[in-house]
Each structure stands twice: as structure tokens, then as C-alpha cells.
Length: 473
Ligand code: HEC
Image (tube, rainbow, N blue to C red; front, side, top):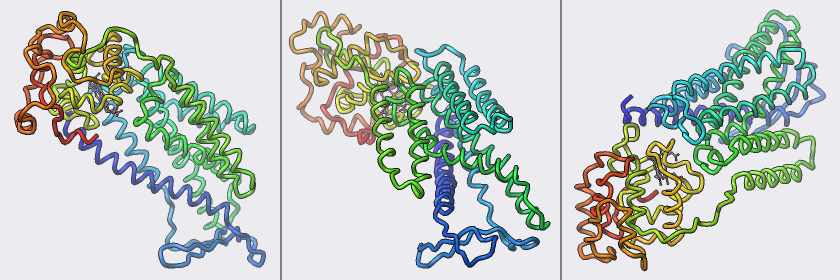
């Protein structure tokens, strides 16, 4: 699919997904809260379950929860089921547009697996469908009678899935698949268990008979599961912003901790109306979870690798060969046609500005280049680390390194023809303006360290600060 079209689809579907998700989860939280705050009034009849007064948007709301007498159905009854469906359907569409189309670029991680994207997609779809079958079967089986046992098995299976998925696709994609699986279980619960139970309730009321208790109980159990899923799922929805989590050495362990903490906090929020001492354990759980995630995502080798100083020119060549295929005002990559996340690395000064993020993604978490598509080596990561540790100098050569050494790592020493310090050149502003109107031609080839990158280095070393839209990142 055309990259531009894909990005716009991503935008529209993501927008719908967030709006529908807010409506669905927001309602779920509100009804949970209502249920726990209803006040049972003694003078009402046996069908009365509780009442509450609310103040919102310029008026008072009187809400009563009750069972209806036989044969009495209001003319209009609101069901609250399409918000869930819209969230799920847009979520699945996003999974396809973002992860499955575009050659599976975000599924790839050569440090984890060499699986073909088709195989990864097969595993992804299989685990989503399979997870529902196993989960639904488990909670319909006799095991479900022992609630803690069934829940423990379910949680164990979910951790197992997280473990397995992080070994067949990138950590980021694995996290997302666990999220899609949880969203699918929730949606299955709504449509296969909770809505049928509500239908039965309506039918029983119309016919004036008792509701089948078993159906009601099962719906209640699934509704509680959904309640516990919400917080962990919301983390997964935003997890792609946090590379240190999915890029950790044991990403599945990080996810497991966050799932437990999220569900645990939800639990204390559920019982807070009957358990006044809920604040302390909640805070303790959050602190413990934070410490565990901190420990799991810390990097043992925070120390900068030792070695000779790395010049701006050397760093530039590395970024030129490994990053600018995507991170350029004019990317040459087959999938990314606009600089991803607005990160443009066309000049040394842009690199200097973004040095902390470059370090985080290319050195610490090694989540860039994406799927290591441009075959970056560990030696190059070390060199970038040293360059950044030395303050990301934009001088062409290190202060006291022999120029012979520097030039040996650059195929054509054309950069040596330039003055050693480039900032403060006359006409910086003018050249910057010309640059953005007539950018240097895109690289003919990347990833093989041929002569063109270093030739381009010379042309992009220019001004100390090149104004560009994307630099506001
Ligand atoms: C194949 C395309 C591709 C290549 C090559 C690539 N990136 Fe990225 N980069 C992306 C995509 C897509 C995103 C946005 C998604 C994300 O953040 O994971 C991104 C995001 C980023 C971000 C911004 C997000 C943040 O964490 O602040 C930085 C910084 C980055 N890349 C650095 C690099 C560096 C450094 C290199 C070269 C060593 C590189 N990238 C190579 C595709 C690429």
C-alpha cells in the first residue's frame, strides 16, 4: 500500500480508536463507580437495588438501579455495546495498517528472530484467535468453579503468551499483540457472554419469569475480568512510546510486572469503598512496581565503551549509512516516506540536538535502526556512544587524533577539504534557507557504506544550525 495513504489511514483509525476507547472504558469506569456508590433505600420495594444523586452539566441526575416488574419494559433502553465493538474493530484495523502492512517493518527484530513477516503475522493472528478459545473454554470448564485457580491459570497463560511472542517478533509488536489479545478477550466477553446475559434478563423480564442465575453469574465474572484488564491494556496502548520497556533485555518480564501492578491498582480502587486502608497498599504496590521496572530496564553497561575519540565526520558517516534512509527530510526507504516521528538527521547539528535520543535508541535500547533494516553493527553503536559521550562534537576531526586515522574510516576524504570548524561560517542563514528549498539529492544506496554517504557528509556538514520544521521534536 502507498506509504502516504497508509499514514493517513493510521491517523483516521487511531483517532476513532482513541475516541471509542475513551467512551467505552469511561462508561465502564462510571458504571463500576455507580454500582459501588448506590445507596439502598429501606422504604423501596424488593426490586430496588439502590439510588444515587449526581451533579453534572447544569442539572441533577437521579439514578436508580432496579429490576423491573414482569412485562414492564421501557420504550427506549440504552445498551452500551457499540463503543466496545468500535474500539475493538478499530484496534484490529490499526494492527493491520501499522504492523501487518508495509512489509511487517515493525514486526522485525533480527536480534530476536529471522522469521518471515508472513510467519509472524500467522503467529500473531493465531495467538489472538487461540487465546479467546482457550480463555473461554477455561472459564466455562469445571475449573472455573475454583475462581482463584482459574484466574491463576489464565494469568500464567497470558505471561506465557507474552514470553513466546517476544521471541518471535519485536518487543514492541509483542507488547501490542498482548494488548490486542486482552482487548479481544474483553470484546468476546461483551458479545458472547455479557450481552447474551442481558438479552436473557430482558426476555425474562418481558415474560415475567426468573432470570437464569447461571447466565447472570457468568456474565458478572466476565465483567469483573474486563474490569481488571482495563488498566494493563491502557498501558499497552501507549507502550510504543517507551522503548526502554519493550527494548529491555527481558521485555516479557517488564510486561508481566506492569500487568500485575495495573490490575492490582485497579483492584484496590475497586475495594476502596469497603476497605478504608486501601491507599497504603496501593502506594506500596506502585513503588514496588516502579522499582521492579526500573531494575528490569536498567542497562548494565551505562559506561561508555572505551576507544579513541570519534570525530563528527565519523559519526556523520554512520548516521548517513544507517539512519537517513528513513530519518531525512526526503527518505529513500521503501516504507517510510516521511521522517518517522519527525526525527530528521540530515545534518551534524541536527544529530547533536537529538544526541540523547539517538543514544537511547541506537546505543542503549538498540531499537533503532528499525528492525536493524540498515544492518548497523555493534562497533558503529559503540562509536556513536563515544561521540555522544564526548559531547557530540560537530568538528570534522577529533582535536588531537591524527587525520590519517580519521580518513581511513571514510572512503573519500573529501570532507578534509572543508575548514575544520564549520560553525560561524559566513552566510549561514542564507545557506540554510537554500538548503531547505533545494535539498541534497537522496542517497542512491544505503546500508553498504559506499562512497556516496561520505560525499554527502561534506555537503551536509554546513551550517551549525539548520532550521527545519522537523527539528521541533
Ligand atoms: C527503516 C527505517 C528507520 C531507520 C533506518 C531508522 N529509524 Fe529511527 N525511527 C523509525 C520509525 C518508524 C520511528 C518511529 C517509531 C518508533 O519510535 O519506534 C523512529 C523513531 C526514531 C526516534 C524518535 C523516537 C524517540 O524515541 O524519541 C529516534 C531518536 C530514532 N528513530 C533514531 C534513529 C537512529 C539514530 C537511527 C540510525 C542508527 C535510526 N533511527 C534509523 C524508523 C527508522
